[in-house]
Image (cartoon, rainbow over all chains, first blue to last red; front, side, top):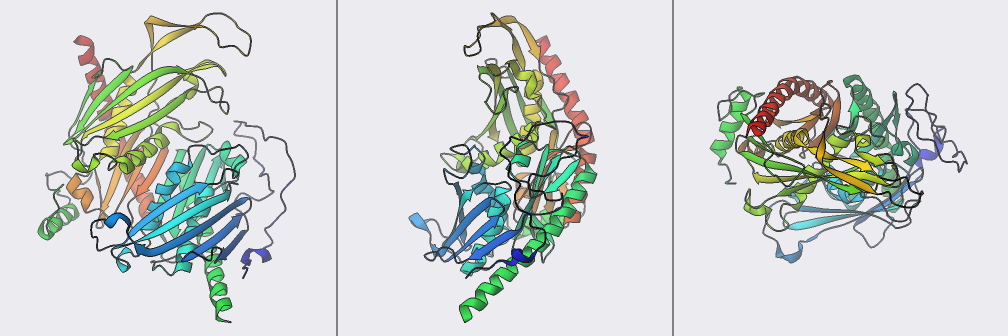
Length: 256
Length: 287
């Protein structure tokens, strides 16, 4: 039951084959050209599938260019170790990288914080009071890291939660924007992230037009932040549409 | 922290709505800030900051290390935060770990800027001794002794003060050696270099309670918040880092408004902090 809503978009262009290392330059008057030939406000085409893991309550697989992530959701199930009673449910998130996810063996220190950032992104959107005394576990595995990893993980996790039937206020989508010199580019790949001057990652609920998580690093002027926010909101609403289509296709396929 | 009764919750929220908080402050007023530097003689730099009931200590230790192969022309900085059980009994054992790592991540984000080093509060190239071989590793440790809300701002101020107080010994690279050998270095005992902290940003946390934002929330007020945004602004007025914490969603226009409020508050906070730090340094010099 594959769903390829992104296949019809004309924005897809094949990856430029080139093994040369991109130079790390600091000239702000040189215009950066993206390695895969995209325009600055263009996202990578998205491949989203639900039901990737049959033994989980819900699961999803996402492919954004070279970033491939699989998320499985277990729950609501009994809280371990007889934790104290709580009338809201608990959420447990874990993000891990496979050893072959990045070109260099082993991953940097980034992914330890991804678990807590995923937790923060999801805790505002899941209706915890619908599953008291129980825990929902979200496990994300990054199979290949091609840039914007956390954004893809968050979007994929929200799709998996919807597939598991966990009640949420809205789907959440996450998009990140990189700033190199004076250029803002959306959905950066690993090479762009490696030499960025600043990063802006936003998680929002597209239908409610609310931002649930925002992380900015590097130096930004207010007009840049405005522009980045607009770019992200646009992309998030489009990604939200794609996710809804994917869920509808999955639901109609299972009805047949 | 003792929970608040329904009446107390209404009191806190209602007061904020009327620009009169429980301790009499306005929404955008900080509690009195007290800075003391040089509190840890063993460290290269240290500072203690008290904002109302929140008490934190930051220390900076510099050790000789090797630059990473990905960035051979830069030194390294590591930030660790420890929430001591004296602040809250729940911090004992592994309880405070989540909060500590969240605070450390936010501080690291504000101090180190983007991956290419742009917008960094600390100039990592100034920590270099010999490219690819020897550099200074800065270990910045924060300790939370007493917690009454607004930990991130207090830690940011303490780190800024500790960095101003930091003196890194001068290093002479002795002999010219072949590429694959470690050069001999001579660490001077007398001459010291002061750190340049003019671009270290301050962090302002805006807490949204109901329809309004407050600055410098106490623990009571933090328990009533719907969400909090921590914005780090440097001297020039550029945003050096932003972290939104707290579950509730915020309208994007609200976030942009918070950014402009934060910039406005930063001006007063930066000048107040600068004067407190220089007063503390002067006190330390005399004693």
